[in-house]
Image (cartoon, rainbow, N blue to C red):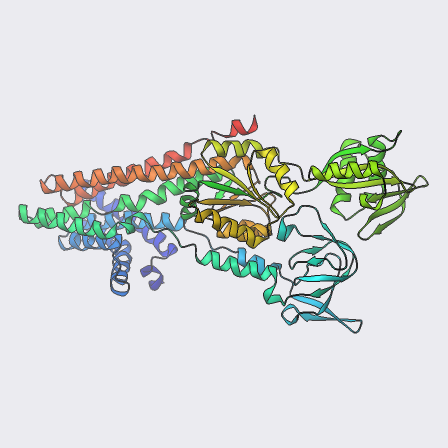
Length: 625
């Protein structure tokens, strides 16, 4: 416990601050209403010891072991000088204010990131290696290049490889951001960390687990996180010259007046308490405001970096779009077949489907027509092709449009693909009757949010693993001009580094596992909490709790306001400090009144910072209009 107290750990510090506040209050009260016991022992001594000893210990340790001059050194000099002159209240008050600042910094300090650990948890622990027709369970670390692995439906693929047998649909959203599963058959490549959503397949390992795509993400995320150093507090940045100026002023005042008490007063009033409070109070108020608006910021360091951003990069799937496919239009290809007839036929055989496209078709029927789709029998999934079944005695098929030789169908398919949609052909008794186009729809609030960000002077960019046509369609819909598509997770990180090399400070906004690396390596990372993965949330500096893009402009606005408050607080604190030095030199302030004067600066800083709690989201009405 003593070691934690000396190291200024949060819990002992909180106990010391509470006790010190009580003792300082008793000390001040006894000056106006004398208490006999306090004529012998001033309770301010307790505050000086409880809050002061860790400060002196920390300053001495930094000076001796690291040859580093911190703000604590100046506070330590003022404490010691006050104690020598028996100014117990001044010593206790200075130490008390400094420890309040320390607590506020702890409150807004960076939380430990768990993104890398979550990525590790995503990696399968075992795999099934096939040898001589028998499958044996082995640790993932034991997989060697060219091993044949059996992957069941629903399993995560453990290493990068190539399909050698079977047909399936693989959900690659975790790695590439593609919202719609990709069909895979013999000869197609698969990535570690993706999920087999269709039928069982066999793959040939092309890389060992240590060289897989997922493991590269883990290694790069660790490196990016390690290279993101915390921002040093303003008081410590300026500590060297503050110590020099304070000592010079104290010496000059002492020599000119030949009164040691006036020199001590100078040291007391020059203590950087307002400097120490300037950043954490403004940050705490801004974070409190944002929390009330549904935005969680993990640290003061994160807020400062967000405030300095000039470019914002967006993932597509789940960030600018809803993150799940839905029916965008239905095209009838045969006379007499209505859109509702085509939808009903497809929904009848897809109503129990586990495929995301089939589920989207059935959901669209329930939403548009209402009730359950027609009954179907003999439903059969055709791996890599689609699904087939019987409805009212007719054979219904829904699946790949390329399986049919029809000029009308091909034209409709090409039109749907040019719009970034996935075409699903519907046939009755082997004759195509219609086409259902599915796509990931743009979020309702995306365009307004991008427009508001532009009004703040931010430059929007899209970075996505999806196809070029899809990416450009979404970007055009929301007002983004710069698009980079078909990017792997490490490609997104490279794109961010290229932007930063050109002098931009970039914030990355994303929601999926594939965004975790970019979120942790960007100047600032912002995750979509409502629909995003836990990995993305833990890798980010800020989280939109409900995935509400409308709150994104307010986040940047509050970050900038907080930085302006900090600068104003510092300017006012400097004016008060230098005024106090003059008054101390003239003998108008003594240590106890100097401590109270110096406390005025701290009070101003706290009140001024607290005004940030009252700031309203000025973009909310614009976003919802």
